[in-house]
Image (cartoon, rainbow, N blue to C red; front, side, top):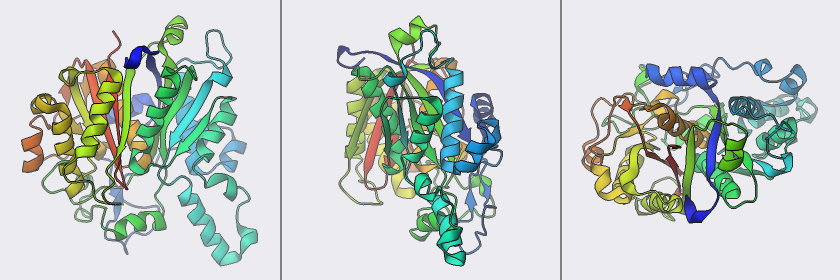
Amino acid sequence: MGNGARRVWITGLGLVTPIGNGLDAFWAGLQRGVSPVKRIDRFDPTTFRSQVAAQVDDFEPLDHMDARAARQLDRFSQFALAAGRMAVEDAGLRMGGRGAPRADRVGVYVGSALGGIAYAESQHERYMERGIRSVAPNLALAVFGGAAPANLGIALGLHGPILSNANSCAAGAVALGEAFHLIRDGRADAALAGGVEVPLSPLAFGAFDIIRALSAGHNDTPGTAARPFDAERDGFVMGEGAALLVLEEAESAERRGATPYAELRGYAATSDAHHMVQPRPDGKQAARAARLALADGRVRASEIDYVNAHASSTPLGDIAEAAAIRMALAERATTVPVSGTKACYGHPLGASGAIEAAICSLALSRGWAPGTVNLDVPDAAALERLPGLTGHPIEGPFRACLSTSFGFGGLNAALAFARVR
């Protein structure tokens, strides 16, 4: 617990992912350990180097909202509303009910690298074909990053702070960390926090493809394309998804009878100040983020029993991260189990850190964590730094977990979690 301040529990999880929507389906997908990556069918990918992605194919908006809301909201806000409502239901949190925090003391913090860009792209196509009168009237209300948390706040009647951030692939972790500090410091009693991303449109996808960030060597075997820390990795596999977590001040959550998954103990963010695409090779600033997160939560490196690595499957990124984790955890890095889980759901950019926070929370409460799917031949440099890299599921119990997230521009974030005793 950082600085003697209030403790923060994670009491609810809401997930929209390529391996399943809702906690039970997501957990079952993790345990199957089969990558959902396939050839893109949202648009014709034949002109791109990479032609695979992790799509959410079974999302039905009407399962989570009425027909009017489904018509008015784009997929970005639909994902947020669905994940948020699932998280609140999972937490058993009835806004306005007995023991629930006041609506003006509940915030919504959501990270997203690209926000409603896919919807904007589709509307731009209509504009180019038929002019401005063909554009949907909700366009201006849908494309900005704050649309998702704002719509969620409206739907749930929440009057606390609404905050969005666009810190690339660290955005979901940053949203969780900032909401955590808000509650710990006494400025709110609860929050819905996490990440939402819906980037699977031709221009958004192509923007990453043209800079050769995406995997292009496994188009014929899509299920093998995402391969964190593997010697044959050649880029990340874009995905879509959402994860929102209910964070609550521990004493009030305990009074209302909540059952926590985990305690969020520490958070920190740093900047490489090095390059817009390439991570700092020595991992120094990424390591500093991890060390600061542990210090923020008064968690010792020796207590970390599992590391969920960002592990995007990029040749440079995975090696820099291995160096960072080794630097941050020192001797503990030679034995601690480490896995990168993005082969299970792709890389949904700003949502990834929030999905991985959910995995850490479940690992602490259920004593099981997924291994690194498609880790056939571990990269020698990564394995040298992290001997605990594994392709097999990891059995607990776990005392504490570390999750790392990194984004374009050298944006680093780390979260430290602990089991609630």
